[in-house]
Image 1: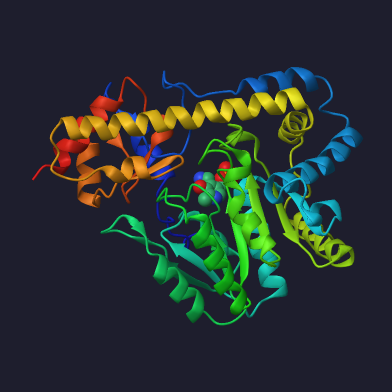
Image 2: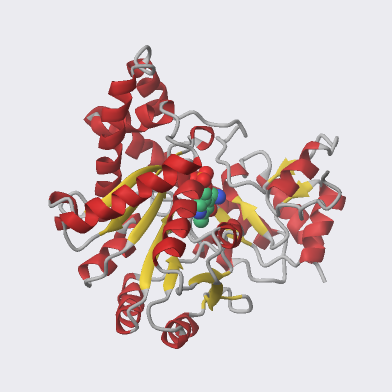
Length: 398
Ligand code: PMP
């Protein structure tokens, strides 16, 4: 048995962490994973999560409680995504289900897409979070890509996005990052979203939003969901994958939601029952503890306010590190422009470093970033930012 099994290719992100862990240098820095750290470099448990934890202590094992709270989580999630005043939310014209975080929500949707629209393709932006390719591959949905980012200008390739939308076969599915695009940190403006929406509609394409960073782009939950709301107002039925890994720091708890807007309640019930059937056969039901934490925070006005304040702290710390990194590179008299560091938003800096320069960062400076030059700004701190700037400068000097 198993002679036919060959090792799978290394995961581009997990592989960086593995290399980092086996490096014994005291100077090493892991900027591969998108995990947020405080300015001391320590993992953060948000205060709102600690308080929610204290509040739910002892209630985790009550099955019925978990089921009820679980269903309320979906309602709170759709309010976050579509706005609490959305008619779809008020009239319950959505099918929603808890999912194993953003990854699980994407996987469920991909499965759903293949079952009910087997003739359709998924269009993924270039670049995108690499796991999107794996997820839709494993669900056996044919994939295509659309152009998104121009490596030379370090900006959105806006007209190319529109061209690729126009050229895709009618009724294609488009995966969109509503905020803090991973890995580029570049989002369309509101006007650009309007145009994207228009062209998607002309071609009867379906917009699928993967929202892994709500609140991490601007520090404001509503602002970060604006793209979704623009498309919905424009008449699209959309779907959305939501994750609390980053914005509540709950990576290990796998809390998320998949929702799809529907024309009426009847459709919503049918779609939801199909989600439930897919989940039932895959993993039956999600773990309860994280769901209780999130729904406690979303339902308690004080904890909710605290969460929003903590999101602002996170985003402003990341922004400060962007400013310092940019400034330090200028002070080192780098001949290159690093303006994109401060123009981008969210967790990542898409630095523009080549694979060779990334390799040099690793071998000469013990600084670990992904192969595509993506730097996790959430792990840059006051004590490592100068070392990082210097390392970047050294490997990019001509
Ligand atoms: N989508 C995007 C764009 C992401 O960046 C991530 C996290 N890296 C995810 C989904 C999934 O994360 P999780 O499963 O932890 O929610």
